[in-house]
Image (cartoon, rainbow, N blue to C red; front, top):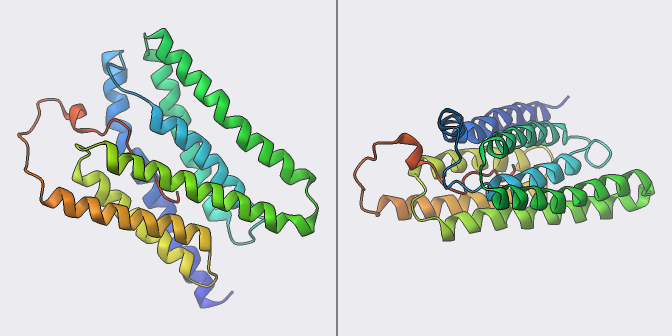
Length: 230
């Protein structure tokens, strides 16, 4: 195994850890929901989107497509499980039937896309796998970047630590995508994620500091996290 491949593997493992730590940033929000036995005004839009995005990244990194993509698949597989746990907690304590129904409907609309692509993968001839892989990569980049832009443009009170954590996570995966073997789709999603986070960090540095709030959960973003890649 070449030194470049070993370095890429090490960076990928660091990226996987960074990604999981990044996803765990919302844990206080869901602990708050658990203790209050109420979701209050929290909306799980981001989590619904990320279940589908993580699922697509899992497909993208499968050995069938990508011999060196197992870390991408593993990272996003665990990330998808974390997001599902968050959604389960939300659904358990959501007292608004319409909100609960909308959450189930959104999940039912998104998950079939992942399942159809997975089924299509099992039927696709080897010479067509490259085209399918590119298609999945493009969808991953579009959805990941779309969620990032939605957060950046819509949510003005997202705390600085959120963007800082995302910036570091995206930076690690950017390095991963450039070492040993170029991974253009991970490069695009991570590169755009870094640019968006850098712009938001600059914006936040010039934003007036608001008085500290009494409830720590109130400082958590309402749509929240992502990863670029992941």
